[in-house]
Length: 77
Image 1 (cartoon, rainbow, N blue to C red):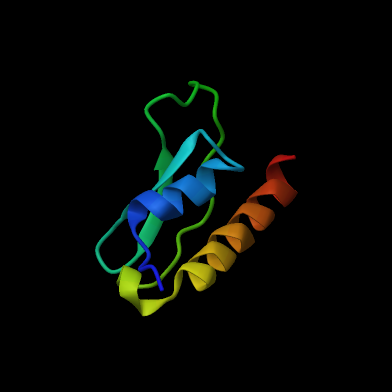
Image 2: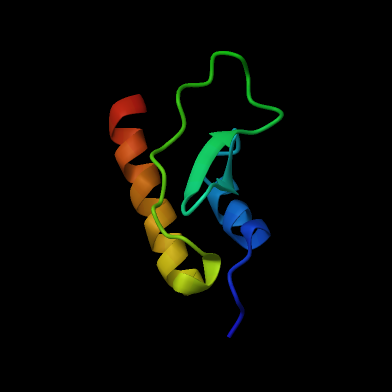
C-alpha cells in the first residue's frame, strides 16, 4: 500500500480546488492559497488536526480532505 505524501494529497485536493495547497503545520495540516491563486480567492478550508501523515491511510486522508472541501463548498458555492 502506498504511503500518503503531501504531493499525493495535494494532487487529490487539486482535482476539486486548484487554488489551494495543503501544508504541514506544527501538529496539524492546513490549507493555504497556492502561488497561482487569484487575489480574490476566499479563505481556504478548515485545517485537518492530525499530527503526521502516517497517522492515516491515503483513503482516510482523501476522505478528510473531501469532508473539509464539502464544508467549504456549502459556504462558498
